[in-house]
Length: 262
Image (cartoon, rainbow, N blue to C red; front, side):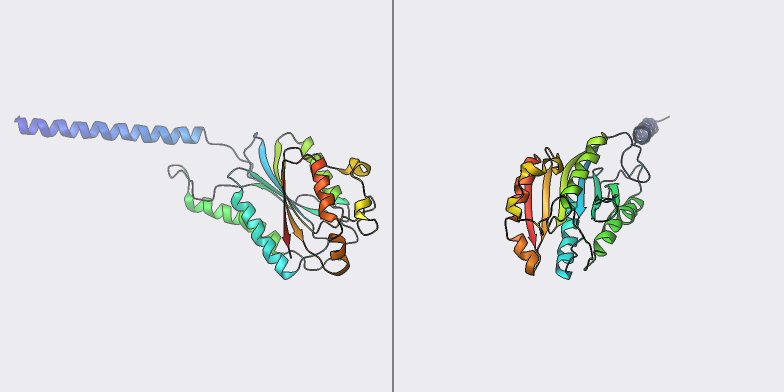
């Protein structure tokens, strides 16, 4: 055998060894990814056994929304989804003026899945992940916001009762940690317990309603404040925001931000 043939055989062997080594590395990586892959609940899309960092969205539909308000709110909800990190939970409730006289059952409750931008190409299908995100998560949220009623015949608006219910429910469930609370409301509280329509807002002392004040310690609160007209506008301009600011202060929130929606 010539030296040239010997060198060619040696090069071929090295390439074979390198190929086998690369295959073993890739196969081991794929196997490790499969073995350590997180398990998710098929309904909520949340990781099984993990504590869910949660954003709660409370929609007060008792006063209805104008076309412009509906448009702005749809964009606001989209912005909240954009802020939501993968695997964090979004739960949507409505203010219920009927059966519960406070918080409704959740109309949406899921963790944000991957959207296709951060997939592992070795073990994940990008197209299927994008399809799941658009249909099982984003699409269902858009359906909720797209059907906001423009008119409502609600006889009450138990807002503070709904907030109190949120506080109670999440104190009970140790697997959920509320980080952010987003409220869409005109803030016109009206129930047998507290009514801004029947009482002077500034005369309603926080100490007198302490049993209804929620415990929102450390929670960031964002309010999209729906503006009203005529007599309701007068109520909104008569110390309403100051009252709610004092209420959320008593609830020990971390941060409170209020944005007007005309």
